[in-house]
Length: 339
Ligand SMILES: *Cc1c(COP(=O)(O)O)cnc(C)c1O
Image (cartoon, rainbow, N blue to C red):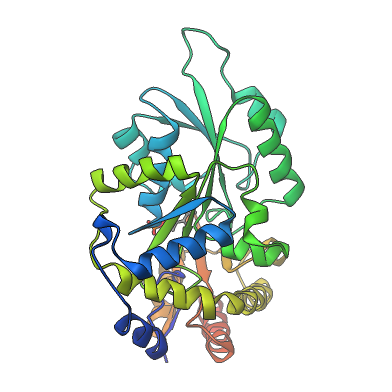
């Protein structure tokens, strides 16, 4: 038995999902002729509370299109410390949009006053601060969702200061479940949102960017420029639609399994974790020799990944059930006892 907890991106399409893909009605999506893509985009726009959505190959492309929509060269976007936009997108904001990112706050969030302090005065020496990004949930701090009141206060403050708002919602589905609200509640007041089908929802590929009709017309052009204009993309969109219909309800169980894993890890020798910090599907703990822990667990069929300085990460997802989590706990307990 292999239990792969390295990421929620490792899921494989089930037989039923593959059947939906095989039966998808398709056309040339660059010409706007793929009915399944249209159906998915309408559905996603509705769920995300936006006028329009555009299917793109990856969350990274969705985020980079958002940066290109919101910032011109030399302009600044404020993000939370350790933002995916800054750490894991190969410097795309600088390379593609010429924008620069300023990190503030702690544990994936920031306050209106921290935002206020980061906004540059209207002065010819300073870069123009044009937008903020809200990563919800925040990967690097263990899938932490933004507390609702804080989110609302920061979005309201951004509006007062004339800043655009992008929501990096790669795992917005997880945030919505953890907070007990519909996804569109987490995009209120935002100009754009990105969301992934390829993570907790278990589709093989694809993300959306959503926003106003006008913004998505421009996003369509930027997608083409970045090489993301795909043709009979309905085969992928069918998987995403299947995931929206059948896999969203499994996310609550992913979160429960992550909490069970965290509670067990907290009792293991050498591991340091605050189980209360696990609010969604990502479990990060500190351990001596993270690379060694990962290697020895992998030898026994449990795959986890080194993460940040001194950390190990395990992510629950659609392909990990209760039996798999029990096995992971057993193996990690033995491996950590040997460190
Ligand atoms: C995974 C992720 C992305 C990028 O998605 P890809 O599909 O891997 O390009 C963006 N933001 C966050 C927070 C992510 O976790």
